[in-house]
Length: 383
Image 1 (tube, one colour):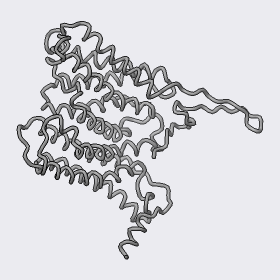
Image 2 (cartoon, one colour):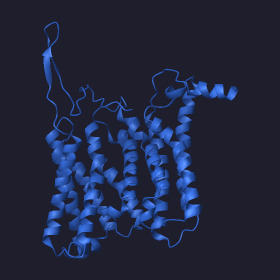
Image 3 (cartoon, one colour):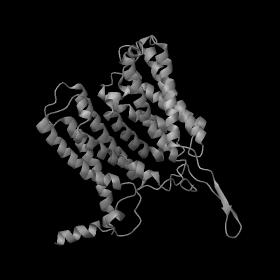
Image 4 (cartoon, helix red, strand yellow):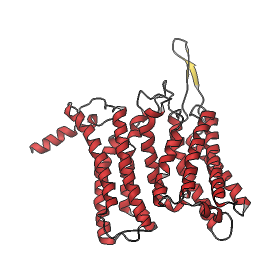
């Protein structure tokens, strides 16, 4: 009875405004998330490159689950520190960390389910590994955990609309590894895993199905790479280097899966990230500059996949044999990027003007989402 009463007191909200964590705390969370994410990459490498995996208890699973234990202990410690000051319930959970906290027991449960799955049904080594229910549960809860720094930064009062790269770095790392999880689970349509020779060969024939497979992979990967950047641009004027950071993190997962056997293609996407940063500096896209936002979405996609075809051709020493394919594919990617930009930032609503009771004119700008504009760029309040 005493234990039950203590648990009820702990869960009862004490009513204070939820605390914010420091940049240092977010950075530690992000770095422990790197441990967690790299552990998964090592495991992905093992599943993709080792002939037989006969047990759940492997060194790569140890790296993966130890990363989970480390970042989970850190998040729980942040809550416990607030409990020691007299807070309880939601008031003890740092702003941005609630989803990650709730995902910790969920991940543990799916980890146990994965152990049972492998024990009784064996170890997957082909595309079925990407559809295992226990793996899907692990990936969703893992994403909630490692993106905690992004949610923490989303409404941090010291960021404003124009954060520095160092201040935004934990959020970028968290989002980058979150996107890497998506890239892992769409490996069957991830163009980053293709080698240069395979790209040129696929676009050298329109009859054997290779061209269609590569084109479909380019479309999936295009959305996967561009969506996180467009999300961030709706919230901040991104500092130079942001897209490059996301790109560096993004190539690690497909690199691990291919044992880094396609380094020229991987480096292409890092260069494309730098091009994206240059486009942001030139166009200055933001939620207030809708045309620039749309232009960035289309041009960055076109530039990325033009570089993709160009680098593959340079490595192989020749262009693909079907000109319609290698010239048209980057254009299709650019058009899809433009469409994605329009979906992320549709028509802005006009400013509303009127008169206050004392006769003073007032003008209220509305964000594209329809929410009132806020001085200082506080953004949309997180849940």
